[in-house]
Image (cartoon, rainbow, N blue to C red; front, side, top):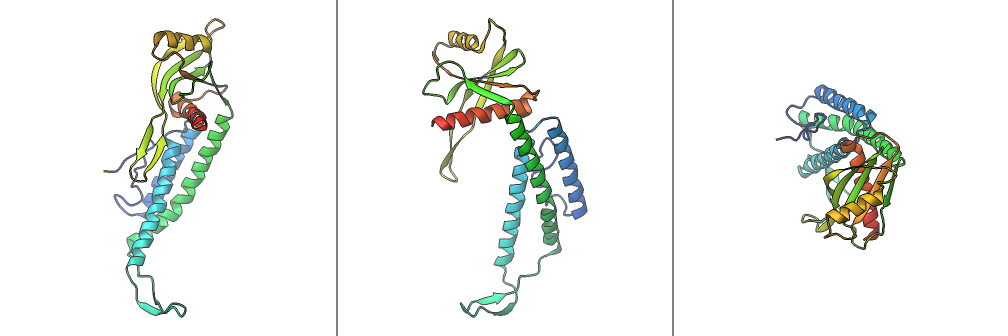
Length: 242
């Protein structure tokens, strides 16, 4: 079963359910227009990551198709004088595979341009974000609190960064996991330091938790942009401490 993104493009859109170049072009252009509208609304995720995945999948499909074609020997056309190996013509590909080639050639540049637009937007937004830690930072920073400020409110999230073992590559990678805790109204008497002190009072098992705050002077959608960018900043800081 194909996986469809929130913008309506299935993961296997290039070769399922039918192979029709004009239909695939129409499908892709509609998808790119929807993503561009999301970017115009400053909604980067999950669309930015989905575009990258689509490009990776198409290039992988192209390589697999080429490898498959080379595995079938075509007619003998000569010998390599330097090695003595036979040289065979590339076998004739079925029409449907030729159409997939056309789809890939059409789709990859458009997807890459949209991905570059998203990367540029992300870089611009990151310039409007300021991240800093609250109080004395402990040695253990892979879990703690993340405070997202919007105006006079600070949304509080518990965060953790577990190590995930990738069995296929025998490598490790990390992802920031968050859980919403509550919201504080900030004022002259209720600062980030006061929020941290209150969290320590409520959770005495963590007497000095790692606490990060992120602020921005832009209006950003919390789920689609603000939180993912804040996680990116926290992840970069934690990795720098590793």
